[in-house]
Length: 198
Ligand code: IMP
Ligand code: MG
Image 1: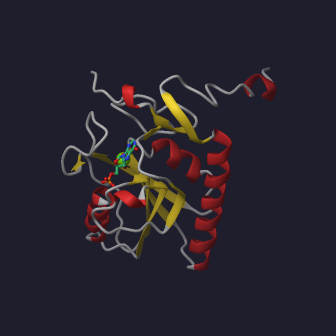
Image 2: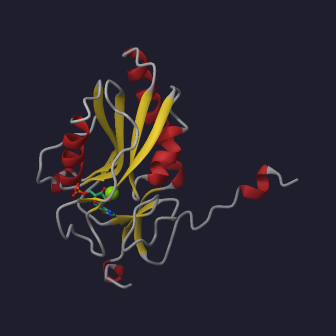
């Protein structure tokens, strides 16, 4: 039987040659995600919500959502929507593209959207409006990161992990051209690595 010590290694926990600076370590993230889960649990319990429907925005928010869900001590339902805004670059190339929609019935339900980064605000303001059409009982948003200085469309999340400056970050689910999602920390991608490949 493997023991817990066998799993105690950290894969690239503090460095990766394509990352110029680690902003949040795996431990920083775990602590903040636990706090967010506790706040969400407390707030919805106070609302007397008998169930919370969590809608994760794929792909970027999948790892954050997986961890956050396990820190929410409520009955939950879970669904995802797929949105692409960046394609291969580090700045949004087009209006966000909704590539799938929710399958769960949201009418009369308490719904929490979970995304990785609130940047220009376009993705979440559009998704928020689209989900409001389902007539949920309540609709809030939780993001891991907020780049407030980049906002073009006004949008505030009810729950935010960390505010960050205007830098392109990868790791903990966030990518550049679908790479680096598996890094356990959030770091700033080196400028010379921000070149589109295939
Ligand atoms: P918005 O519509 O500009 O707010 O775009 C938000 C989406 O862009 C996020 O959900 C991310 O998927 C992506 N994004 C924004 N900034 C970054 C970044 O620094 N690294 C990786 N993805 C990012
Ligand atoms: Mg995203």
